[in-house]
Image (cartoon, rainbow, N blue to C red; front, side, top):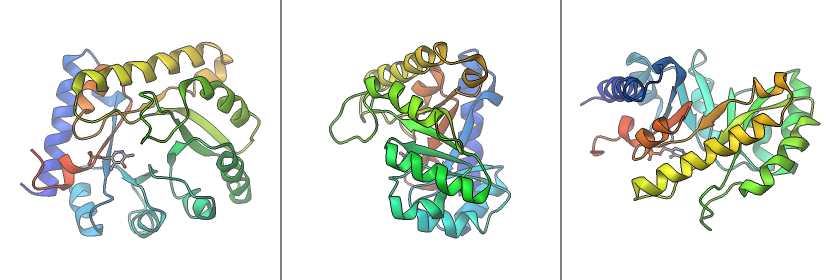
Length: 229
Ligand SMILES: *Cc1c(COP(=O)(O)O)cnc(C)c1O
C-alpha cells in the first residue's frame, strides 16, 4: 500500500466508525501526524485528500507548513519557550499547552502578529508519570488564566491514553469528555460555544476515542508506516 492508499483507507474507516456510533463523519477531523516522514509523503497524503497534518518539532513544522500552505498544520509536541515564535501563526491549532508561562508568551507573540492563536489544553487524565499535561483538577484554573489573555483562545482539550489496553484507553477518553462537559457548563455561552474540541486517539486507539466523542484524531503510523498492522 502507498501512503495515499493508507490515508484513504484510514479516512474511510474513520467515516465508518463515526456512522456506527451514530456520529456525522464531518464532525471528526483526521490529523495526519507526519513527524516521521518528509515532504514527499506529505504530498502523497494530500493526494489522498489530507487537509490536516500534525508535527511535534518546530523545525519540521516550519519546513512542511511553509511548503504546504493550503493545509492546516497542528502543533502536537512539547512546547519550548524559545521556539514559540516558530509555532504561533504557523500552527492553526496548538494541542499541547499546559504551562501558564507558555500561554502568556503565545498570547504576546500572537498579539505582535495581530492574530488570536487557537490552542487546546493538554490534560494528563490517566495520571501516568511519563505523561505531560495538566492534572484534571488544574484545568479550570488554567482556563481562567487563558481567559485573561487577549490573543489566545482555548478551543478544547487534548489527551494521550496509556498504551496497550483498549478498555483503559476508552476510560481515559471518557474522562476527557466528562471534563470538557463539566468545564463548558460553567462558561458563559459564547465561550462555551468555542470550547468544544476533544483531541484524542492515535493509530492504536482512535476507534475508542471516536466512540467517546473525539472531534480530532491524531494518526501517524497507520497512515505513514508500511509496517503498521
Ligand atoms: C506521534 C504522535 C501521535 C501519532 O501516533 P501514532 O501512534 O503514530 O498514530 C499522536 N499524538 C501525538 C502527541 C504524537 O506525538
